[in-house]
Image 1 (cartoon, rainbow, N blue to C red):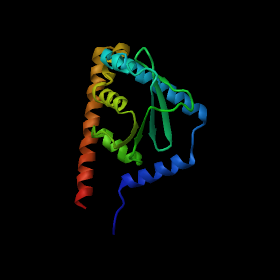
Image 2: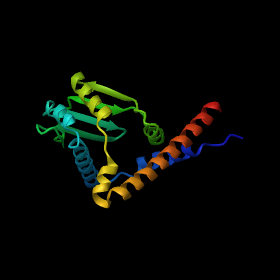
Image 3: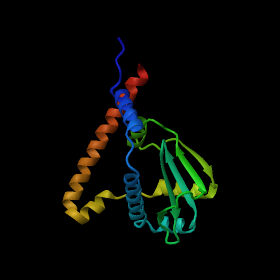
Length: 179
């Protein structure tokens, strides 16, 4: 008797929920605004990233995954803004992995997901540099709120949990490959 993986059950549930439940447009709009704010916060901690982005001012990058789209505009300040609706993208980046569970597994293993890139090659190279070199120091931001010691402890706990998840996913994937 074949047993079904809990990951496939979770994936089926997520797929069914995603196709039947769509958030209202205002929720999508607000989430996208918050994502832009977070990206700008992270970019402001990296002057080189801002300088590279400033050179691309006025260029539009369209990020897509399944039915989710976010069009970003590079500003003269080296930050990001949402592009006007209907703006023609200079670069379109589509994440090709459609399974949310498989995508989460890749990200937890610190692997880049597969993407399809269409558009300006130089802009694609700059976006790739940003993806490779810009990191959010969450522990530093947390220390501004709760202090260094607490932030460091929370960071250690989070790293332990992530290491455990990576180990679990590694053993699960190895067992799946062996079967």
